[in-house]
Length: 380
Image: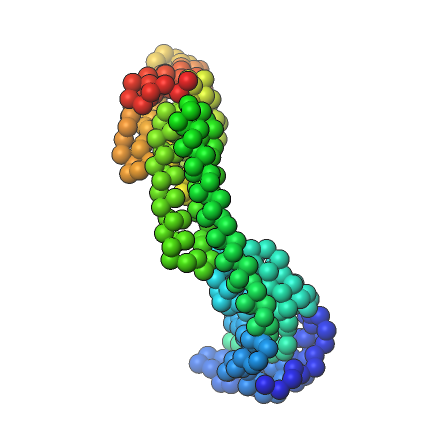
């Protein structure tokens, strides 16, 4: 491949690029109910926009593309992010790159930064050439503008192989560490240190839930077996230690008709469980959700009525359940009622809600404690 064409260092200022787009080329194409004008950054699109250059002895080439961007800057960033996505896919770590992270790394590329950091070290990545089109569609008084972008980058073969080797070694070491943590968890459980064993199992789950990068078939099987063993062992301990995850409590009154999540009720339920000897936790990692029993609750106003002049009665019900993390089967489910009184319907409803938080949630927590002690042993 011929050497790279000369280009301005760093990122083109948006205003300058817009001027260049207008100056270089203008095409007018009839449309169904208007006309389309296309302004190009070059008179003709470079060959590499249609066909990615073949790899040579030293470099691999990638073309990032973006279509329909609202601004030139967005087209630049999207094209750069697309190029980076192709590279991390070639390395095998695309799962660790979110959209926001790709955009952030794209900014580094557009500034001619030669090294990107994170889950993958993309060292030596270089922006070579760029090509943009501005599309203007006129339809009466309405004008719509979009941008397409193309970005040619090169990546050293040596960097790719070095990074793949580094990640392979890192994944292998991770399997070894997970196996040691698993052995330590079993030792702690045997000695009666259940909390310590649970903590070690959580570490095993954190290590095994990360995607393995170019792991050997043997290492992949070891990782999968470790994960399953850790899930089963941690699940058993979560019942014994009374660890539960509390889902956001849903509440609805007769006027709204719908249900909404409320942090006040959720925190009240968590506190009631904590006083009864449970260890509430909020599960964000998907794999941990397979380990800890879930507590779900919904509270609804059934009706409100006037008893005497200026005095109101409100009736609420709460359904609270504990679900098995394996299949969401019901381990415990109870329905409670709370009666509220007040000088108007709103105050009566608030009084019933207070009783739900203070009385009903505590009653459920005590019943759940008795159920866990009977069926799964004491949490100590």
